[in-house]
Image (cartoon, rainbow, N blue to C red; front, side, top):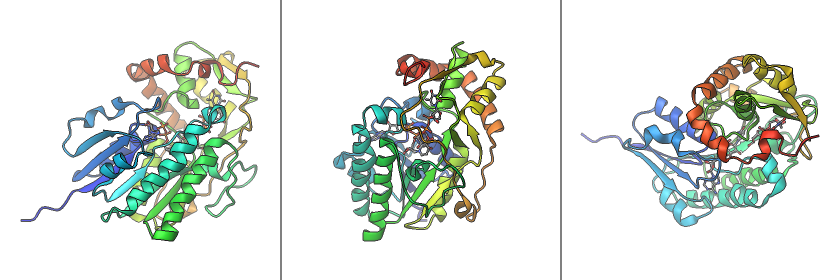
Length: 339
Ligand code: NAD
Ligand code: DAU
């Protein structure tokens, strides 16, 4: 009897926040798979996110840079599905020092696409882009066809990767699908992202730094809902198409801070208004009807997702404590300084 060949997934950036959640989700969904994670292990990565798979047959971790064609070629060999999460992802850092963003988020995507072209087994290449490529929107919501107007070096670099991926579909018919998701939260997020920063500061009895007046709006997507959407798109995403993925949970930063404070039994005095981010995008909002037509619906509202996230960080101090000790201490009191 001939055994069916195992499906091979290449997950780049799989030791980071969303990538590692996606690896967990893949193993929940499928058994007969091989998963290769290619990750450079930047400051944002954490191999402990993948610890339970270390000795699993068919799981392989490769430490390497997506800008390095040699290592990418090796990791790509025989892969049917590639999901590219690898990126420099922190907006504040990109404002301070854009160079690594241009390299990984544009050139690295090119190297991956170029090696993917040579891979005869490839069925799907998912490029994980971001809602930030549209820029800010004061009223209404972005459709996939809306104009692209990134306003910081991170989102401008991500747009480079996003459009390069599309160009490989248009030019070479590479089976590329592009996703643009809103702000994620949940387990294993690096602590410079606002929700884990606020939760861990409050656990430590510190104040939480709200930029400006806290009036900016983000649409919060629980990371597991993001994973279900990406998985669906590996099967049903049309080649050459873009899909928005939003949680439908818009909230100002100050309202978010207050919700977290309430959940954790803290008070308004734990909030500190600090210097704003330069060029701070005011609001993101996505129309996700295209994805919903494929059968996707988010399962988490913000209240439920925040409750689980607060509980997770409360129960996993051994995960985040060493990260917090090593992280850029500027974040603790406001990346751009006090007012
Ligand atoms: P993260 O910063 O937690 O993880 C990024 C991972 O990529 C890390 O493990 C890092 O080591 C790896 N990496 C960085 N440069 C690399 C390189 N040159 N070669 C190989 N690996 C490299 O990021 P995240 O929040 O999990 O985001 C994952 C993806 O999702 C990114 O592409 C990001 O732009 C996109 N995205 C994130 C959000 C969000 O809210 N976090 C929302 C929308 C889209
Ligand atoms: O929208 C998707 C994007 O969301 C992703 O593409 C990025 O990779 C991801 O980092 C995230 O970008 P943001 O800049 O929106 O996320 P961040 O967690 O840095 O900030 C969320 C909001 O909270 C933003 O309006 C700035 C504010 N903020 C942030 C920090 C770190 C504060 O008020 N205080 C803070 O200390």
